[in-house]
Image (cartoon, rainbow, N blue to C red; front, side):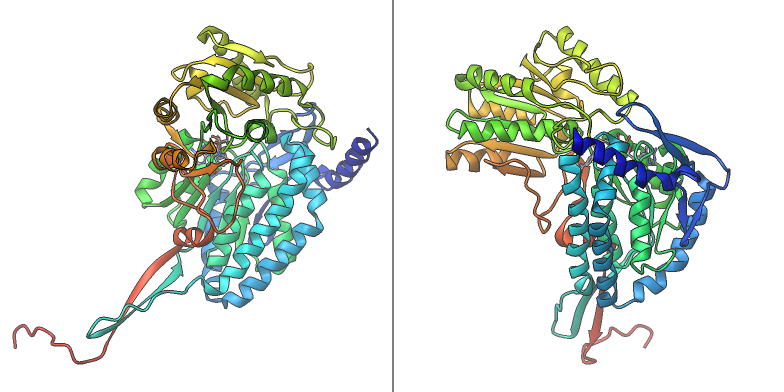
Length: 503
Ligand code: NAD
């Protein structure tokens, strides 16, 4: 309890700076209110208390910021990669210095537990370091000589880009998208999620204090259908990197069509964790629990569908239920807390509605299925058993601490269930049979698969989904493929025959 009190005291100290003007936009290095003067409120999911007012940007603010990003682009593009590298490393240093402030503010704004958020802030710094080191080589290309031409390729940054982020782990996800854009030489206009605006502002302040030139990165807060939509439609914005729901991705693709926007989508998931009878069941249990109940289950890569072989299902589900009952739900700033409140009332209503859906579907609620307390948006970690894959609780992304368990008898049936879903982000396969692991990973429809492991992110590997889970990949060089254009130049040796017309 003492640690919780200390953390609350520290948080209150960090938040005083927002008391007066709230969270402002940042355009061309200036902190500005929305041109309309309008604001919206951000409140904490812990007790619904007001955190502060936030600038409610719209098309006018987006236009102002896009023009600034366009004007700042040539100088940033032409800066030596080695200089961009130094600035990005200094941003990482700044994140590390303010990691505690970022973690406490993020927990209060989103309801995420501190035990995960302190690491997420540091992962944000790592994202900057990873892409900082790649900035000097971002333009590297190939030499592809033909008999008469020296053909070379290079890459150039695409231009000012729009980055739209969701409210789950917003700080880490923002760094994940913005760091490669800057390393590539693009300028950025960031529209963070309206439910979690606080740390996006802190992040940009860190960047400008680290020496990022004004206008290279701009921030406009606001609602998706106002500021977000205007950003996707703006003619000076050359690409949109978006993380969020699949249905929002569809809207953005339509909104960006008239200006032929390049899009990169990281969307929803309903990811299977498949546990075969020959697996190391203790490790499988730990990983399955971690991947759905950490981060409040508000995680795109969560293992929200457990596919368990019928020969071991009774015992596995019993152990699972026992552990789920013991997960510690509480105040996000208490270091002992494992699950905090859901982000917002609307999301709480969505997640809770699946408790009735499960009953109506005929599934069993083996744990949870109830609200916790009557203040804040807490739900008890929930386990549905006896489910079939055609039930809504098995097909729809619930995005909370809610696991749906489905039984299978054969490998073919496991694969059939796993793939019978609109999504295809991640898959987790637990087996000690190597040849089975090869067969299953080969046929599983997912962008990322882990065998005998939870999701362990390695930054050089490609991150992204198939089907309704996304378009494109992040990580390593894949991020640069999105933020840059390939260019081919052919230098003739001067000897090839040029066909002569009218000669
Ligand atoms: P959301 O789609 O509701 O909102 C995401 C962002 O899009 C917000 O900033 C919002 O303001 C903006 N937006 C909404 N409508 C828009 C429009 N018409 N035009 C432009 N912008 C618009 O998503 P959310 O509820 O904030 O986040 C949760 C979702 O994100 C889940 O589906 C989750 O799986 C997904 N997600 C995916 C990944 C991944 O890597 N695949 C990672 C994290 C989250």
